[in-house]
Image 1 (cartoon, rainbow, N blue to C red):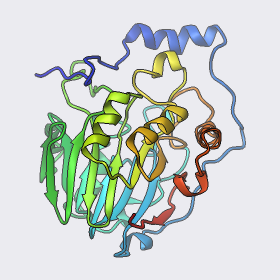
Image 2 (image 1 turned 180 degrees about the vertical axis):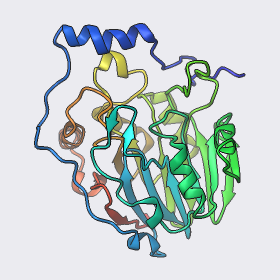
Image 3 (image 1 turned 30 degrees about the vertical axis):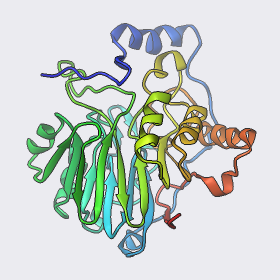
Image 4 (image 1 turned 60 degrees about the horizontal axis):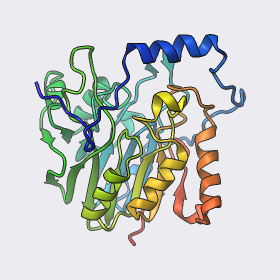
Length: 313
C-alpha cells in the first residue's frame, strides 16, 4: 500500500513514546490537565432540521468538524459525526441536528480516516437518507464500500468531482492518517474546496499550520468566501503542533487564504486534548482584535446547531 506524506515531505503522526510522555509523564510532572471553567457548556441552539430545508444558501454547525451547507442548490455535509462517544470521551454537546432530521444530502466529504472525522455509523445513517455521493481522499473508499455505502468517489490532491451543481476539489492538508496500527499513512488526507454559483467554501479537515499548504490553496482558489478552519485540539503544543493548529495559527491561515469569512470548527464537542474547552474561541477573538480585524463581520463562531444564511461576495 502507498505511504503518503505531507507536501513538505514530513509525516505528522506521533508514536507510542510521544503518547506515553503526554498521557503519563506530563501528568506526573504536573503539566496536564489545565483547568477550565467547570461551568462552561458549549453554546447550542435547538435545530430540528427545518432550517436546512431552505433553498437559499446556508451553513449549519453540527459540531466538531461536521457542517452542512447548501450551495448551488446542493446540500453538502463535511466530516459528519453524530456519535455520542469518541473512544472513552463523551460528546460535550449533542449534534446540532440529528441525522434523521437532515434533508437528503447530495454530497458528503470526509477529510481522512481518523475516527473523529470518519464515523462509519454516521455515514451509514446519511446513506440511508440519500444516497449522497461520498467524496474521500485516495485509498479511503474501501472503508465506506465495506460498510455497504455506494457512490464513493476518491480524489487525489487537486483532483475534482462535479455533482448536483457543485465542483468539489480535494486539497492538501498538513496532517496524517491512521485507522488501525497497521495502516498508518496508507490513506490520503486532505481538505475540500466546494465551488458553486453561490460562492466558494473551503473545509480544511484536520491540519497543522503550513504556509506552503495554505498559499498553494490560495493560488488555485483566489476567491474563498467561507473558510472552515479547525481552532481546537492544540495542547500540549510539543505534541500537537505537527498535526493541529492553535487559534492564532488558524487566524494566520485565514489571512494567507485571503478568505472573506473564517468559520471556526473542531472545538467544543469532544475533549481530545488539554486546553480548556472554552479557550479556543476566546484566543481567536483576541487574535482578531490584536490584528485589527473586525471579528463581528469576519469571524463566525457558531453555536452548535446554529444556521446562518450565506451571502455571496
